[in-house]
Image (tube, rainbow, N blue to C red; front, side, top):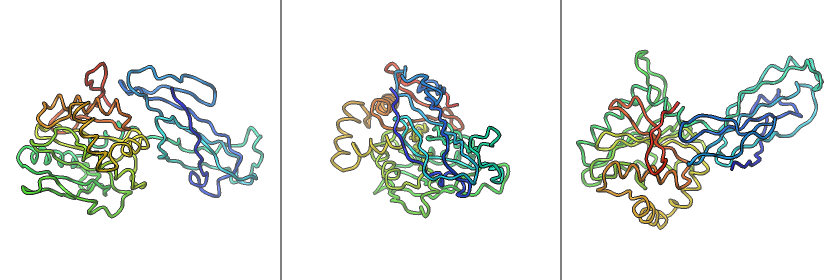
Length: 345
């Protein structure tokens, strides 16, 4: 069942202040994304109820597109607009823009010739598939993943890169949209510790990628989830397309993407926010319930990890590399007690 929660939107945050006039009419369409095929279907709209039941084995996720119809400059009134978002998607990442107000010459909001102010859709969630596809086509990002693969298979300590927004490469034949900073552990201290070093602007902080050598889990660890949790909880300026990637000693890469930020933070508050909670989560969930353990086969750990993300409302989606060049990933779903790969379109 999808429910809705009203949120206040300041129109001045969405359009140029001089173009903000009220009253405005809000039109919204809420869609859900199927967890198995990643198809999008209409749930409901201002035109009436469409569908309000998720008919899938896994949780459906939703997003809302909002269109504002405002009178032109010169009309009176003040206030804020409101919108609704699916309870499985309460994140508030928005983009918007203003439209031509016809120089304010028409001040009658009931005039059928009065032009609409057209804003860009307010997308409450940026789909993880869209975020992941940027990584598949970035040549330098793929080179960094290959470095991690080589390090994971040849060294007994971790290597890590922080990923930040960067200027595009001056070499037109190379796609390079990020800047990187390198960290690594040592023989005596194999776990890498970066502690936020080198991040001068959290708004530009886009992700972390790192290696797990053969003595570590082949999937993301509780420590990795803790790192991602604190980044997302404590830094509101970090955008929802933040990712956390891993390359294990077999060369397989996994990338975690945010599906629902509020759900992920709530998951972290429940399981990861204190040392005691982390210990219990490792013992009771990772190891006992989902059989994610060092020494297990890669496939067993992968199955347990994907199952855990789907059964606990983690707010995360995981993607797996399908080739050795890291040019293609599949979304991993847990369906009918099996891990099922699906295209990310």
